Length: 613
Image 1 (cartoon, rainbow, N blue to C red):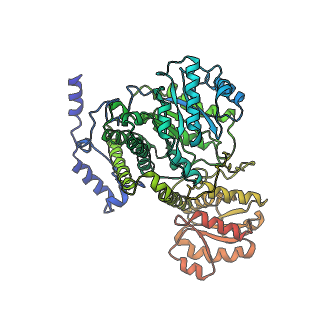
Image 2: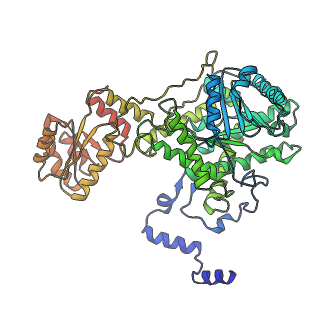
Image 3: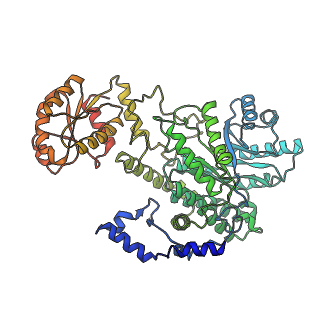
């Protein structure tokens, strides 16, 4: 085999980095390498167009999976738990559903208790028939009920005679997430007691870092990671200062992180998260190094879900689940594709489960540990992201810690600013949302789908601090399209195609895509011999908007003539931003659509001109 390899490589002489750069420079023909090929990420660092083995020389690639600092995973295999959330409004129904889905591939249940304590007979009924030592059981409740819920679970396990060292799960206790969501100040008064209550349950966690709420509010990867580290450190610092041993505290902390759509960046995020958290816990000198292991439940994003072309949500959540699985998380929750506009039903929940089962049973993602390990690109991405997140973590600590920054509204301010910037980028198509701001299904109607409002129980008290803006990135485009639908008419956009064949087709396609985002009807054409023929056809079709599609060189001739021919019968638009635009404006032509447009604002303006409110 060694001889074969030597012969193979001898046929392909090594190529140096300088030779690669020389070839790239030649092919760029004078264009700027940085501007053309270097990706400037939202995370604050640059990504090169290629990486080589020499780029790994200062990085740790020798540590094995399961070894400190756990960048390559906390486990010797790549198994993960398939988690599904269940409402407990109806105890009997929740139990029936739990028993059903446990037979369909789920091995982690998360009961959403809301503001309700489930104990005694209710807890018996909820867990009736469920082998609690065979699956992962999680209870999500409010901060003030966490201790009572934990005690009820401990009492239940004792009563049933389970081995307390083996049962797994969590009681969600997260006062900081409560503050970010509700704007009501909440301390950590119950944290120490909760740790003590759950001490008999060695594999149960409770002190929760719900940083997924940041991801669902549009936060960049480095923000979610940096704040998550500070979040977890808040628990460690507070409780060790109260006298608890660091390892005892760390073993009760769980991380609920989101999964965004930036595939490789998300893989890097989870790898960097484990590495940085291990180093934070190590600094507290726990009695056992195993306390440095980060436990992560990852949930696919709600932020990029859409109500139009909703089945695309399946593609989004599948690639998100893939990145989390490859990164070696402990459990994954796939958000059903219809969660943005309705209460998920049996079909959408089944699809969500099967998305993970496909990754396990057909793609065998659970068979290979850290396949990204040693990748020139992902190893560098992991290191660069870790560096940016660490800077944010240190900044938070310098300013008083996560709790202090949340109370001051600084975390909310930073994440909401990112959300606003991403909405702006979507409006300008700098960030693409397939089926919403790019390539919409122009024949699709909402069929009664509307953005779902939060049905969670309202927190007691009046907000005194800022909250996170959780508006999805598609929300403004959806509002615009629903506005068009509710008007009772679909404006007709007629493509007056003429002149240069390639340019007129390209611009007609661009314009159809552009106006389709508002739900307008698109009437495309193969081409007209004269602008008069096109204008006449537009009037016959009852066009509300006529878009002249030709080449920049021909607009000087066709623009004024077409504008005159269309007259007052429709709104006249030119597709493009030609050099003669000032002359065209002087001739009275006001409307243009091109790649530099703010698509959202332009379409809002057209709705206004068409009296669609």
